[in-house]
Image (cartoon, rainbow, N blue to C red; front, top):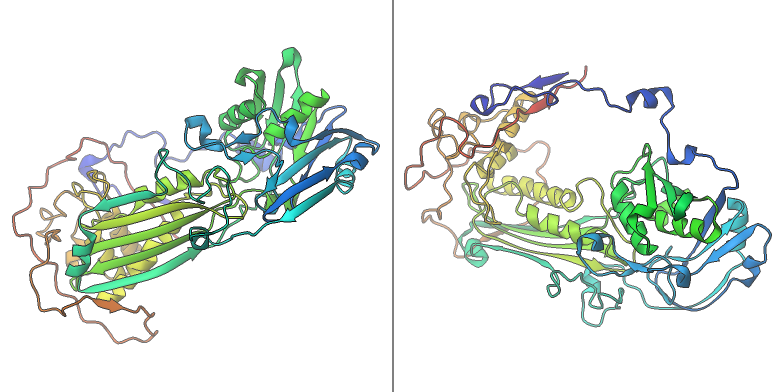
Length: 531
């Protein structure tokens, strides 16, 4: 059951919607419920060959020598693929949009930089033959020091992980080692604050664990073209990346995507297609390359680890007056999509809250871990986790209800964001109000009357808006109080109501009858609990 709240933003609604709020059958639903949806691996071809990859057992090592002579003599082995066979061996995913430098080899030739990095491929008549042949390859390594912590990787004298970025940080616009955000005066904001709350948040790498592992099949076609059946989430992205690595024109490749058996962002990295295409070109036969579960867990890109430091200055009346964020994205050994995640993270700071003083530094850091990639809101998910945990701690520090605290600080239409963009189509206040209503969570009348409208809702029942001007002088300690946050006991005594937000020093502009920005606002859709 869905409930459309037509009472919210009624004068801005567009009710002539064909999809929003309407039940729509997915085009692939019949195949899913009958078990007939085609996956890439459902395609069968005569004389199909199989590609398997030799991977590094070390997190960081120099390759001294590779002896594949015994593997080459094994019955059923059709071709051995080495780094020298790859037409364009260095690549980075976002090079297609001129973002970043080529830094990751399809097959390593001199140094391996994470455990599981591909070194050599064997094409054989069966997966079993290919795996047995891999066991006959002899590689001599010189192990090198490794670094696995983002802050350790940035220290003076740390191990250099990525030869393209020797300082272990991604390079933005050819010269900057991180993304930076500055708004207002952070030092003055902290000096003004009655309390300062700061904490450290850590998210570990997360494996997508799709039911269907990464894989693809390349089949030679007429006129030198190849047909590729793939599980990719990004069909044209994978096509262009594969064409680049194989030094081909994109119109020489025909990519066919079927049903993706789970992806969640983990199948955008083009991990199998370039080498399976190369194998098909070198052998003239159809070739399949699919990950085993161990490969998927070790070589398939995870959501990257993230470390986030948040420091906030807050007034006793609940207004956040300063927020400082320092964040580190663990990209692993190569760039892939982490550099883009950093841009998204910086763009999301300080969260959906109007804060007059904001200071942020966000780094994309290279370590000897498996390269990271996209996963469901990457760049924002961990930051939101950190910021919303921090909001709960701030609410506790000032003795406010956590929902009322968010409503007080939430964006209103017309507020200026830290990125110097005007806030539009804001609805956090209304979402919080309806969530509280559904959960039978009590809100005081003044917070139930607040609005995301420009001015904060003064025209709705005379609700006092929160001001963003500096707080009036009040008796306060000479230095901000630093709060060591601890969760309150289960049976905590009732808290006294905080003082009301200070009134504006000048009257707010009148609330317009309709949307002040001209953009249609869609209705909010809220689910109801199943019983």
